[in-house]
Amino acid sequence: MTSMVDPDSPPFADTFDIEGRWEIVYSSEFYVEPVAGPPGTFEQPYQVHFDVVSPGDFGGVKFEGPFDSPDQPGVFYGQTVYNGRGAHLVHMVMRYDPNRYFQAHSGAHWPQEDDDAVHVRGGWVDVGHQLTRKEPLRAPYRGLFRMRKL
Image 1 (cartoon, rainbow, N blue to C red):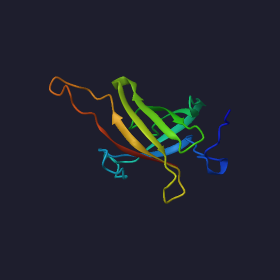
Image 2: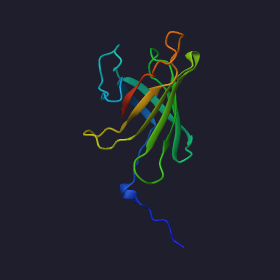
Image 3: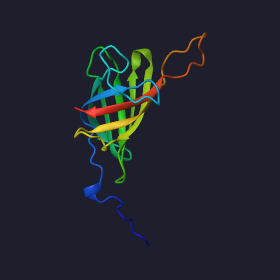
Image 4: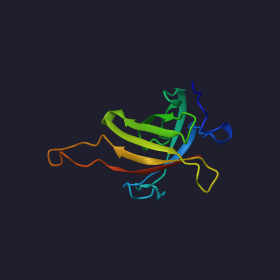
């Protein structure tokens, strides 16, 4: 009978905390790095606030929270995934019910940044824009995102 070996001992384990205020910046393509632009542009930074609501299904936590701006409606629902090895994965859906609009996000804790802030980097895809008879197969909006804890 073999016993499990802890691959990442506690001093090296990922200690990620999703709760709190975050800044999120989007890019408009998967090959474009998300860099904050001026207000009113696609690349403008948005602020969100996450609260932990329960333990997660896979070692992390479930969380939710809205954009911190009345100009940007929608609420995020998500979960971190962590099993004591590697970095925390972050899966989020931004939902805006009146328009049945969704954005799916998948990323990871990114501790390799130059500053002391906590970062998440990943990709997003729009899964709720309206199709029309003229554009029945329009490709979804998609790109990269970067979050920084404030």
